[in-house]
Image (cartoon, rainbow, N blue to C red; front, side, top):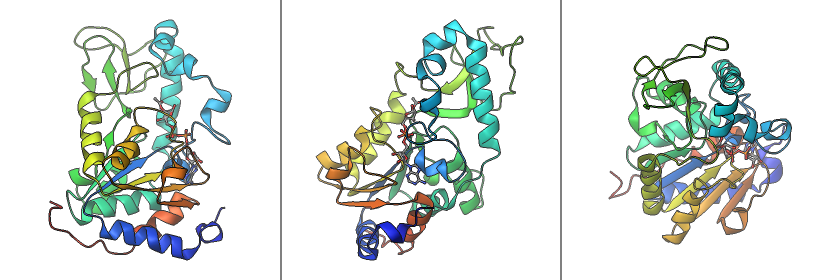
Length: 270
Ligand code: OAD
């Protein structure tokens, strides 16, 4: 385990925390690293899925056309894995931050694992705590959608070869409701994320290699609009040199410490 305190001076954690608590608006961008402590594998780095698997075989429209059974089996495996995982203290800390002053904090995630939603429901004690639900810019693994007409199944059964799942409306193959390499992101979801980034005084970036665009633009939008970036990661990323504070360590340790200082509600944060 990498301890937060062994890598960061406590003053840095306090400074980041003070910047967060003083911010009128916050946008948070999360990546696979926030779910690593829950047991969900990351994509890059040690143990990352793209170390042993090729995205072009599993996460592109061409791969699905070539071998839908292979792609669907890989997603069924990931769905089963995620079902066994639980949100960790980092997901819970962000849910609490988002619920504390509704409208002040916007969560944006590249993750498709649904763990932010589960933490939000647990923290709020309700089924639909909308302010703590993230914009899921790369979609959600637990949904499928029709590869032709776009009909979405919110609660699909895992069906694998030879009986591949078909759309009840148009009979085309159902596919995971995620964004694959070479595909456009949902413009509404991306637009709302960029709007939040532009309005934010602080962009908190957690557990992402900051390499995959356009999601990696979220902190850049905040910086361009005059805000600052606080980064939490095990290691430096291309964003680190532009961050006001860079905290090296595990999100599950650092996030609760960062958000423990009660945020001061500000005028205009509604
Ligand atoms: P990556 O796997 O590229 O990066 C994970 C980051 O999390 C790395 O920078 C790690 O150092 C960091 N990390 C790992 N464990 C951590 C921990 N416990 N605490 C803090 N940080 C930790 O994942 P993403 O940046 O999310 O896209 O990848 C972006 C996109 O690339 C994904 O959404 C996916 C992938 O291909 C698509 O599938 C379209």
